[in-house]
Length: 70
Image (cartoon, rainbow, N blue to C red; front, side, top):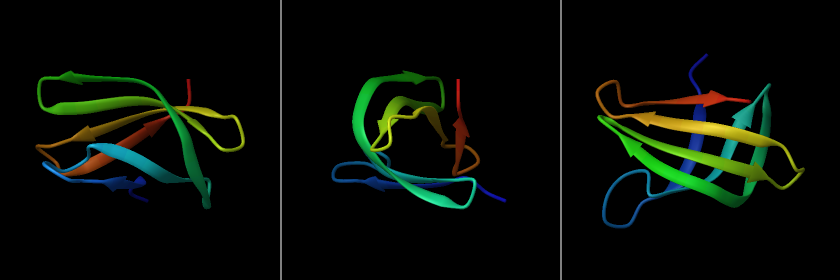
């Protein structure tokens, strides 16, 4: 199953993640703890409304999101 991340996009795609689907549950992002770029990726460390921490990566070449829980 592909990772599902909902995001806000104003000037370019994937500017601000607002929710993600993890283990068949939709979790709203309450806070972006960090954001950075690597070649070909936009990466975010986020806290969800229920307090979980996730790392999200948008990989432009594959046009897909990756979700990791550290």
